[in-house]
Image 1 (cartoon, rainbow, N blue to C red):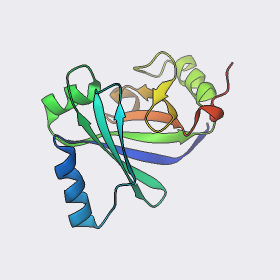
Image 2: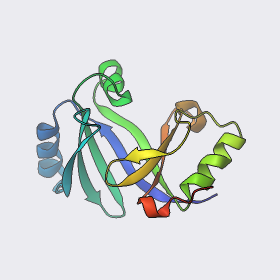
Image 3: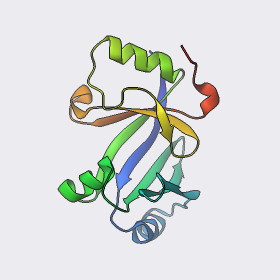
Image 4: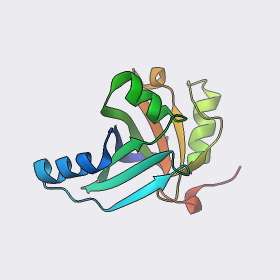
Length: 141
C-alpha cells in the first residue's frame, strides 16, 4: 500500500468567486492559484490548509462528473484525494483486487498531477481519488 496522506478535499461549488470569498471571509484562507481544467470544463481554485488542500471546483458545462454531482446533489464535498507513492503500482493493485474504479488507467489531473478515481462503493460511499503530485512520480510498468 502506498497511500502517503490525504492530498486534497474536492468541493463542488456553483459560483467560484462567491465560494472563494466565503472561504476567505469565514476561515481566513487564501487561494494559492486558479486553474482552468479540461479546456473550459472546470474552473478550480486551490486553497492550502496545512498539508491538505481544499479544491473548490466549479463545473462550467455538462460533460464531467463534477457537473453531474452539482446537478444532482448541489454544492458540497465531492471527493477525497489520497497521495500515493507509485500511482501505476497502486492502480494495478486495485484493479487486481477487483476494487470498483471509474478510470481504466491514470490520466492527467489539475496542477500537473496524474489521477485515477475509485467508485463510491469502494470507500463506503465516498468518491476516492489517487493522485501523484507530478508526472515524474509515475512509474511505467
